[in-house]
Length: 465
Ligand SMILES: Cc1cc2nc3c(=O)[nH]c(=O)nc-3n(C[C@H](O)[C@H](O)[C@H](O)COP(=O)(O)OP(=O)(O)OC[C@H]3O[C@@H](n4cnc5c(N)ncnc54)[C@H](O)[C@@H]3O)c2cc1C
Image 1 (cartoon, rainbow, N blue to C red):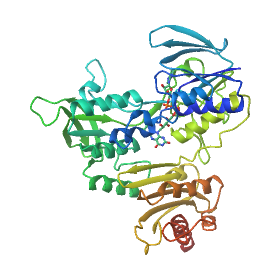
Image 2: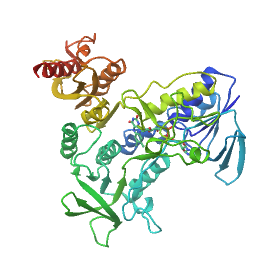
Image 3: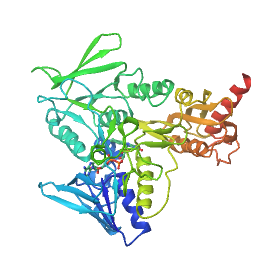
Image 4: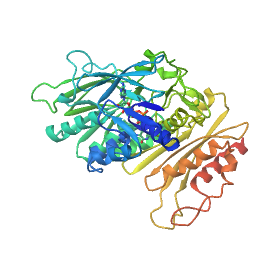
């Protein structure tokens, strides 16, 4: 049995590892267009900041580990065309040579590519790029280009276009490196994946660390600055009220999201769905014979929303594992995402799982969202931190639908959001969260965990109405 994976990141490698786990005799080939198999692109901001000291340390596993696990790696090799009927994959090497690889089962894990927004200066023959200090950020190649700008041009200032989680992590990283950072976000608040009440707390953390945050600000153009200007680039933007804003900077990072990379699968006849992602069933089957797909390039089955698109590393690992298992002859289903995510911004962290109020309403629930605060551990023990909590539950059934948290990075925000992720997965009511037998010792927690206090605040508010 010859299994071929296209893509050597979270989805492709997870699929390859799982297939080899289940069938140690399987012949597994991973085709990837760069030379960085199984690199944690989620760790890029921490390499840029200097906290991760060498790019090689970003590898989840080394090339040697992967080969020892029994997969053949075809680096610097691009999949060009899938011949579904003939079960063959046309690949080309960096040198331009072409080859047909036969397969029994194929897994497409081509991931996502960064969105290039309609900003003057980013497209066309005169487009500015890494040599000018203008960067997109997704791959290891992009990372090396950013590092070359930082090390060779020694920029003193940067504009980051985009206030989503990658933009925020990069604002943190570039500030740590000593750059003066301006963050421009077209929506009214940064981190629009959480409620504005929490986004405002993230905003305050950025501002407190010297990041100039311009919200409601749409970037229109990037150009080279005139000689003698404050930076080598100029960013032109418009504020919501129509006022023009111009900022000089030595480097510009455009991080406004990603889109699924689906051209290869679509050309082979795969159906595209939400946000142009490849349609798969929960077993990661594309509907094309013997072709599976997983990761950022596919739609996401969501436990509360049905089908959506939520590109996340955690999801790509799980979907890849399911695809690998099924390609090896198994019958596993992806259990569904809750969009659980967490981001660190300097010393704070923001996290969410499940649905926010407006998302729950759109999905047909009758949501109520209640905000509260609690300490991460008993306040009498030194070093406690306040956690801001927003619980969303369904008024009629009492079911827990979502949780958002903001607090100090030492306040176990990530693991606390995971309590709620587990509770929503299990279909628990908000009130039942209080019944969970969670751990307690004063330096680390409270008899009622912060998440339980948030749940009790929600129940109290509901009973009052
Ligand atoms: C800076 C940054 C930080 C992030 N932080 C987090 C985080 O904290 N938590 C989280 O859950 N997620 C995070 N993510 C998202 C996460 O990295 C992605 O969801 C995840 O990498 C998706 O994995 P994937 O395998 O589907 O695709 P990708 O990682 O996009 O990989 C696609 C692979 O396919 C290859 N490829 C594409 N086309 C071809 C072709 N034609 N032929 C051969 N090879 C091809 C590429 O070279 C690559 O190896 C972050 C992303 C970035 C960029």
